[in-house]
Length: 180
Image (cartoon, helix red, strand yellow):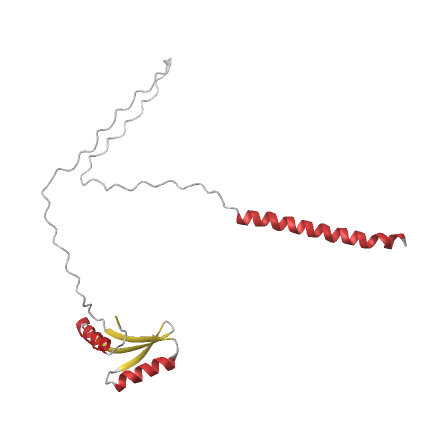
C-alpha cells in the first residue's frame, strides 16, 4: 500500500520534468531561430577594366639557372625584379562620330493595338460593358487574360488609330488603356 501512496507523486514529477525540458528546448530553439546570424561580409570584387586595344607583348619567361656541381656558395638574396613598364595608352586617333541610334518608331511590325475599356473579375460585368459599347456602335469584345475579363475595342496596326479611338471613348466618359 505504501507503494501506491508515492506513485501519483512520481507521475507528477515526471510530467513536470518533461514540461520543463520541453520549455527549455523550445526557448533554446527559438533563440537560435530568431537570433541574427553573423555572416562574413563578402569582399567587393573590383570592376574589370577594359583591355587596351594594343597591349605590349608579355616578356618571355627567364629560364632558371641549372645547378652547378661542386662547392655551393652561400645563398645570396634574390635580385629584386624590375618593375614592368606601365602599358602605354593606345595612340590617339581622331574618333569618327558615331551615328545617332535610329529613332525608335512607336510602330512595331506585326503588333496590334487594342483599346481596353475595362477589366473585370466577373464575366457578367464584362458582358454588360461590352453590350453597352455595342449599343453605342463600337465593335467591343471580351478577351480573357490573367484571370480577368478584359473588354476591348478594335485591333489597330497603327498606334495613332488606337489613340484616336481611345480619345473618342474618353470623351464618352470611359477610362481606357491602349494595349499592344
